[in-house]
Length: 149
Image 1 (cartoon, helix red, strand yellow):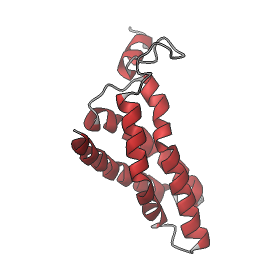
Image 2: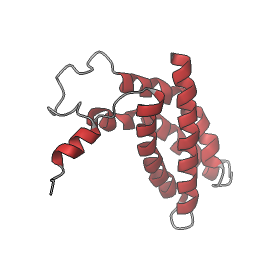
Image 3: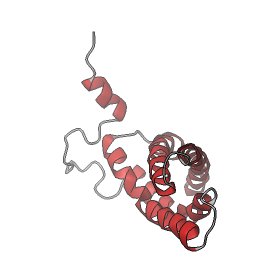
């Protein structure tokens, strides 16, 4: 099961990286490379959350998971951002390819943290969350809060 999840995680990672890189390249002419990196990272992370919920872990997307999901990318963000800076400003690589090189170092850490958040840990559904609707799916929340005509 873990092997299949890892393969699916890698496939989602390929899609996520393509999304990130396309956004990065689209933003690069208008923003400094670090700002383009941050915005592209946020866009691709949102897509990655939904793909990992459904495709990798076959789990329901909840607000709690959505709010915790950025933790899966915290190490990835630090490693890639530091890597992009190091590669571009220190080692004088081109800003076009630096993000792809920097991203490869964070993959194992991201998988472990992602799997823990998506499949839950000891406090999964323990009822101690800050919001009574923390485990409500995103679709249920939208349906509940959207007025009907």
